[in-house]
Length: 167
Image (cartoon, rainbow, N blue to C red; front, side):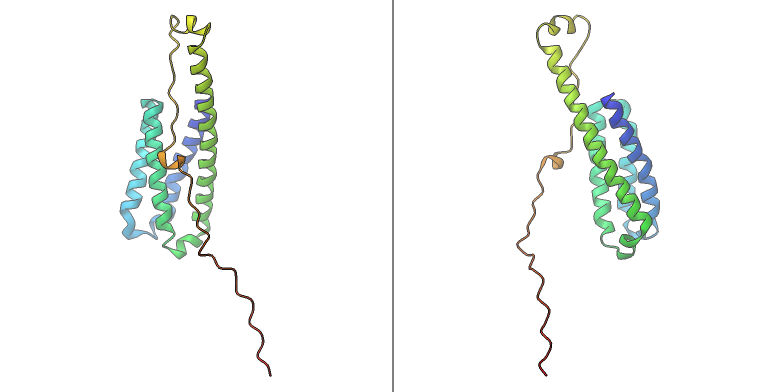
């Protein structure tokens, strides 16, 4: 059930990506390599689902990385950043990414409980003979484990309004 929740969210993300690519395609004619990378990463992620949890996690992490590069490129196009359709799709993808993270967390907690249960007494006596084996975690990408650095030192407070000229 926990893995199924991840798969539901991943399918939602996979379904949103072609819409986003189509929405930005007209604006980003010379950025074709970014769009191609996103499209290929999506195709790899869709096909990786049948290859097991580890392969699926790796493919999804690659897709996340290409989506980040797409969003970075979108920042260079003011018209595109202001496009309501693109903004709505970005918001949907952000919400979906959050749901994937929550689903992944739930799945990994469930796997931890399961793996612990089949390795402890008395379950260990039954688990092996009946074919219960250790499950793999749905690993997040390495960048997701890093805490983002925030530097607020260059932010100056707003200047007070200028005094009217004496006069």
